[in-house]
Amino acid sequence: MRHAKLLLWAGAAMAVPAHSSVTASSDVGFSVENRVDIAADAATVYRLLAQPGRWWSSEHSYSGNAANLSLKPVAGGCFCETLPNGGSVEHARVIYAAPDKRLRLSGALGPLQAEAVTGTLDFTIEPAAKGVRVVMRYAAGGYLRGDGAKMAAMVDKVLAEQLAGLARAAEASKP
Image 1 (tube, rainbow, N blue to C red):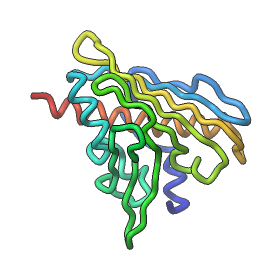
Image 2 (image 1 turned 45 degrees about the horizontal axis):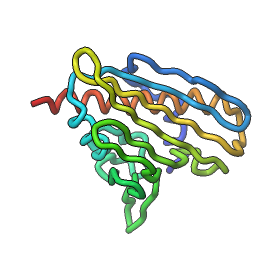
Image 3 (image 1 turned 90 degrees about the vertical axis):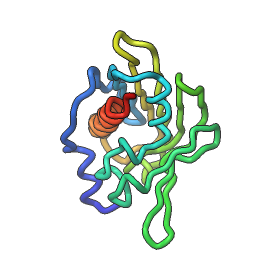
């Protein structure tokens, strides 16, 4: 990823989910939580989680094109991206898949890949008044060569943008 792409983590303009916050941070890690109510059914939302090219921002990809992202929603499945000239990157690996209810991945996202950290990205889908509520939590820990609190705030903003994209795609897909 080019250096300019890394800076986008800090200044991403986005639609903010109903709730977005850094829930903890320290020199060795952080956790963030975002949630949004979506006027769609659980099956639609879960199906879209496996199609990140439809909702993930191209600005937060290594190739610059979200269409190059894929996610296989089974244990061991890859959240991967194809790159030019036959390259590829693994963003995360699926460690838990419960269709229409939960998808959990393990991986260091974005610039965290260059650090000695690991992370867990967890999506839960639960009934809500006009459809479903999606809660997205990401916890990362290990050795960070920088300010954990600053990194947490940047990651929170980027993940909030992705969740807002999921909500837009799901609501546009309603039958």
